[in-house]
Length: 288
Length: 288
Image (cartoon, rainbow over all chains, first blue to last red; front, side, top):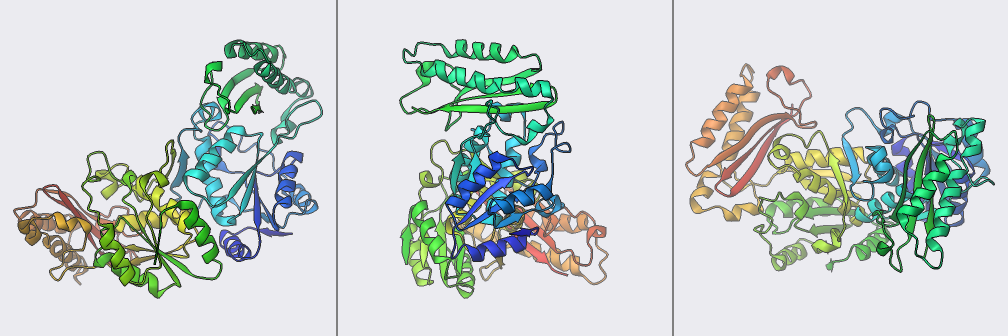
């Protein structure tokens, strides 16, 4: 396994490797957990060479967000990558990707508008910009993202379609603790008490899915949502629910009534909940 | 020579071709003239396979601009390309590049802010978006643009650097009529009278360059500009001068005093002038 820190060196290497190998790519912000490792496994299955990038992208954090507090442990990440059969880690510093005078940004303007995009203005502009840059540097045939960040997956899907990026996207399922909590690098910040309440996010999502797929199908979405709010608010360490939302899983258009759900509509139920300073997101998809 | 109309087909082809050939690319809006042919010649010199795209990009025209009036003649363009040794023309229709629900845009926010960007808001957003899309479709090793559109060249240079696009940019010199008028597809709209006045744009640029490089070097930029305005305004068919500007040729920062010109600063003198509905731009670069 090799660690690459320069854009030029990486790009020259991938241009050469591409000619005879299938390259897959897993972009991460590091502090890897089993969720990331499942993405790496998925990548390995489909390619000859696996690239992982580790870069905490300042552009996707708001001024009041947790950029400086975001957990980092490159030594540990390196070992995990090596043990997972990763071939190359791209591990640039901030100046390598955003040199002085940097001035170009990628904006997806529809799928990114609601949900996380509304609560975190500028977040997806940071995501689409860095992901496009990384695609251009790693030049992968296949790129793997997690379903955990459902809106991110939809926004990146829209961006790669719109900009004709020549990489195939794989969205791998969310990995959960036994009690249902979705794996996230931010989970380490939960107190013991908050950690006990956190699985209720998934419980609420499961409740929503159950109600929506109930065969008589006569429930009202606003009613289901209200019940989900109630269930989460019942946990004492929850300080704020940013949103609970029902959306078209591809376009992310809001679904507020069952009339908007057609035969082939995949429904995304997603939510964002704060436990003090720790903000968690989770989602569930209902395929038809 | 082959004509390609689909993104998928073109992208599959270029991915394959790239493995054993150097691909060069000349993006155009068609209605080719000797200026374009000089870019094709430059491309041919440096590569195994030459791609030309012909696409009048609606995204770079403002609502009050000349999109519908922009001249088109694909039959003629096809013959010119064939005679110039072009290997492939990429000739998509608008829906192929901007399908319904299109929502992703590329913005360069510094080099694109002044000059044309100020007079034509949204223009460079259209340019950087389409050029990035075309880069992703054609996947060229080398891309050739004209110095005629000086700010476009600088903005695309900044965009490819910032987004780590793996293509080498070549900026080829402006081709002129014998009387100095820069070739442009828009020249066909000039009346006989306007056509006689149009060479004064280049005369004014040459005057500016002469004054700026005069060895005693004691002229004031505002004074030189005033003289250039005077010279152009003296032509009766000129209806408006949008700007005459002195800029750093790389960053496009405005230069308003000689103190801002250092040893290695390349100075770009550029202008935009209207003859009724016909708007012409031209420029000259002073290398040091």
